[in-house]
Length: 145
Image (cartoon, rainbow, N blue to C red; front, top):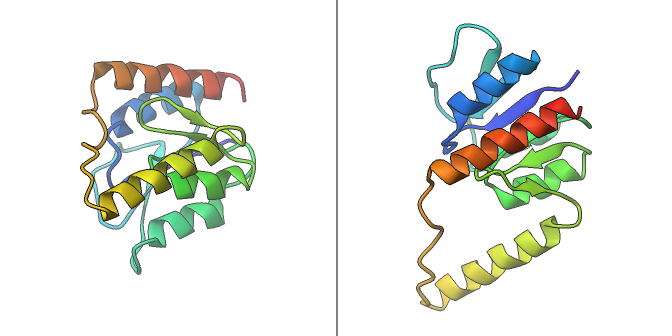
């Protein structure tokens, strides 16, 4: 059975994830480093303690082929793809085996530019278009499982 695993600490689309998953009868597991409010049913919260990557490590240990992982963390996306999970970014971008290399390279380039003192400006603000793109992509992923 498909499960939606959410890297929840900085996730701006938790409520949207709950709604779409409920419509498809798919359980949601939020993984975070602190307690947060969740709906009464259909959503499990796993609070992990430990190092910086504890939540990521928990997700990788529990993700299976066919699961959907929601994250904006590109290295986590890469790790989950290698397990056969489908990965969806907060802005509705599906990470695939074909696209993850480019995403990893862009992340590394941005990091190097920041280290050199070049201001990159960071990502644009999250907006309604991003929310809509995410909803559509998650709907399609869960419909095609």
